[in-house]
Structures are given as C-alpha cells and as structure tokens.
Length: 250
Ligand SMILES: C[S@@+](CC[C@H](N)C(=O)[O-])C[C@H]1O[C@@H](n2cnc3c(N)ncnc32)[C@H](O)[C@@H]1O
Image (cartoon, rainbow, N blue to C red; front, top):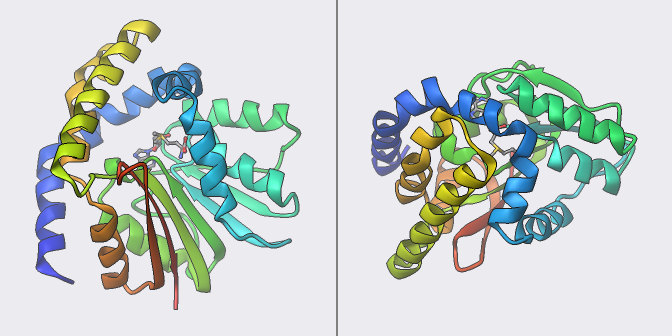
C-alpha cells in the first residue's frame, strides 16, 4: 500500500475519530425523520437527479445479491428494486432510526424485502465472496476508507462490482474553497430550518473539514487500484465535488 494513503488515513482518523465514535450516530438519529427533505432542500433537488444518475450506472441482473453499505433511508436499495425487482437486497447501517425511516419508505413503495443489518460497516457481518454487487453512497467521508473498501472487497464475489458515489474534494483549489463556503452555509441553514440537536450543531464544522481532508476523484481511483480492484473507473461530476466510481473484484 502506497504510504501516502496510509498517512492520509492516519490524519483523517486522528482528526475525526472522536466525531465518528461519539457524534455521528447521534447526528443521524436526529436527522433521520427529515434527512431526505433536508438533502432535497440543501441541493435544490439535485440530490434526486444524482441518485437516478448513479443508479442508472449500476448493472444488476435477476436473482443477484446486492449489499448497500451505509444504506441510511434505503434510497439505493429502492432505486435498484425499481430497476430490477427480482434482487436480494441487503442494507447495512449503524443507525436504527435511519433504517426505520428506510423500511417505512420501502414498504410504502411495495418493497418489503430489503433485509436490514444494524452494524458498524468496518466489519461486515457476511461471509467472503457473497455479493454480486455492493454499493456505497454519501457516507465514505465518515469512514476509515482503506478498512471499509477492503471489507467490501472481501464480501464481493470474484467478478462482482463495487459502485461508489460520494461528495469528494475537488482537485481544483478554487472550486474546493467555493464548495466549502457553500457547504458551511448549507449546514448552518439546515440546522436552523429543521431545529437540529446539539450533536448535529456540534458537527457543523466537521462536515466541511471531512471534505477538505478527503480524496479527489483521481486519488480515490488510485486507492481502489492499490486495494486490489481491477477495471477501476472514476467519473467526476459537478466539477469534482461529487465522484462516481465503479470497480471490479478480480
Ligand atoms: C449521509 S447518510 C447516507 C445514507 C444513504 N447511503 C444515502 O445515499 O442517502 C450516511 C449514513 O452512513 C451511516 N454510517 C456512518 N458511519 C457508519 C458506520 N461506521 N457504520 C455503519 N453506518 C455508518 C449513517 O448512519 C448514515 O445512515
């Protein structure tokens, strides 16, 4: 493993370990009932278009086993079942309140078969070589990337695909600065508009710092290759503020 990635992960972990261990779960417990509305509001509806675009890149066939990591309110599981109803979909997330909202949302749309696993995704409760497809959207900033992406590779079948989407650090410094200003304003406005709890207010700065210390599209592509994935394809969306990645387990 290239030492620059190990160093970056060490820096991220020492900067954020307290937030990851103590605050993030409280933030999502508070946010769960308004998570989807807040995202829609903060992105002026763009979030739904990005999700549709991301799901359109995911190739799923009947009977395949799919795992959505950090599934939250099941946006990806639902999107995949709408595309291909004959899937076995598993959702892994540490937040029971987020998964409860996701279960209700899925059932309202007639999908009663998303299997929920409440767990810390740094250790996935599945055997090796188990899934055809694993997805991870809007959450990697909150994780130890090398550990989780290696764990995803462990549970993927050989020839299976990992699809990733997250807010990334734009490679261009000017874009990064403008993006971080926008995020600061968004996080504060959402906290006021939706009456966020103390944990969410405390994390306002974290949400911006997590981007500043995160990976660009190119860096994440190289990291996936370093971790042993093949056919890695990274696409920059919205000037590198978002990245879509697809990678195959050899
Ligand atoms: C921003 S939400 C994204 C949810 C969903 N993937 C989506 O696209 O809307 C981040 C999710 O990651 C989950 N999460 C964060 N850290 C986690 C961890 N260590 N283990 C499991 N879930 C975690 C949170 O509970 C939350 O549901």
